Length: 138
Image (cartoon, rainbow, N blue to C red):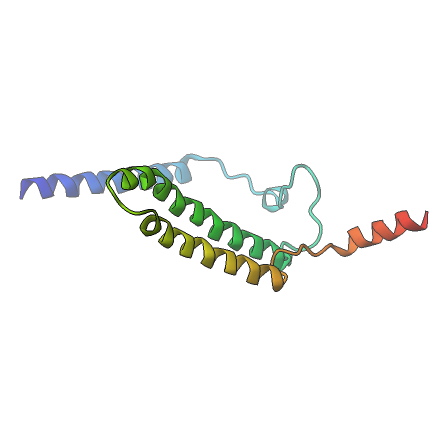
């Protein structure tokens, strides 16, 4: 039971020290309220507009596809490491390759589906389209 008392005391110390430091800081620090302290600071520039910005859904689609294919490489790497040792132990080539080919086939079907539905087609912004037409007019 004495171990639990030591663990509990250590937990109290771990929580008490940061709380004590914050209380001491709140009591000892000078308070100089001014309007500039509550303003948003953005690299010395005056902020304009709201903080709410709508992002293009393509960012999320590319991120999701990246995660899927990143996980694919994580799953394929161990397979490639044990491939040779499995062959040396007498496993047939078809037994080793079939599950991985099915796995890669499912991923290729997913990529083709995403491609056909426009998930990897990057949509140009209106500004880029305007600049392109301005260059063509000049």
